[in-house]
Length: 358
Image (cartoon, rainbow, N blue to C red; front, side, top):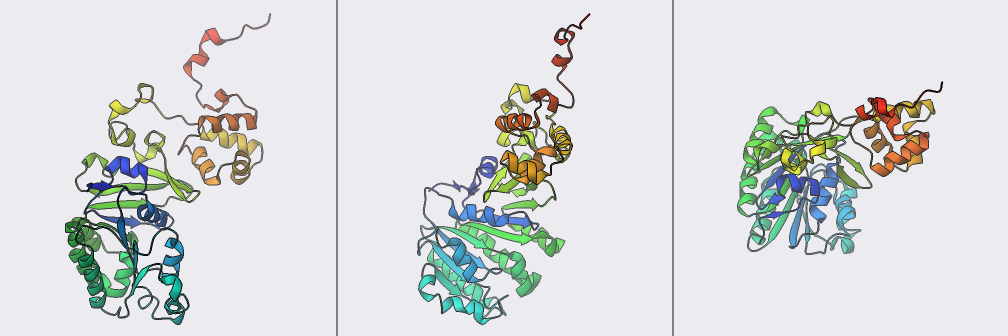
């Protein structure tokens, strides 16, 4: 049995060495950070081992969970613990219809519907039974889809009591677990207790007109230099794409000797990139676009990229690929050096000046 497995996001795996058996990963989220795709990548990644996947839903009805994951798993590989229908769903007949109108389809999953959500006792009993069932020679992934939703039902004290009991138990069972929470919905004391108990904390931040930002706030068993380093990412084509470290925005304080490429020091960075200022061509692209009276959406469509990707380039949050750079230059009918605010010194050399006509 291996000790670490993929999160489904190769960039994160390269940084933290994958998710270690026993890791509880708390995700502190802002809206608009595409966490559901981090989660889907984690659950559906192709590992060289068979996992049992136990999805505990506080925020989403069983119909939605079923529709999202029905094509990924066999019936024995995915178990839904429905804490929504009689929790936030308040027993509404529409949500209960999943168990009547869709009874044949719902057999795709094992489903445990918790009918008494006023107190956590029945919920804890079901979770304990599942932990006992799979504690011997089984690899398990647990997803508690919302600590925030749990708190809305049982209050801060009840949610924290469940977490402080379950997190160490999953660690001892060598399970992998995800625990997302909306960071602005909890007290500082609650967050401090969660941070103290869990093994990993990953912060996801939304930035309007910029790439989203991720950073590790806690990483048990990993180098401390990885903490609080900001990594930017975009989302398109239903995938998460991280921007390479040397393309990160200056204002976030990236330094090659702090992290380098995928956690390596500056010795892992090619010599021509060491201690160099990043290229900044975004403003020139934006200027050329304005002169053509084009919006970002229009230019992005012509270049066959997303408006978000073009925005990142124009704000110098990422660099275009060489082929895209050439396409942009051809579109504006410009030479490549026209995009550099400060032309290379070699181009200013007298030996490059053309002789003036007499």
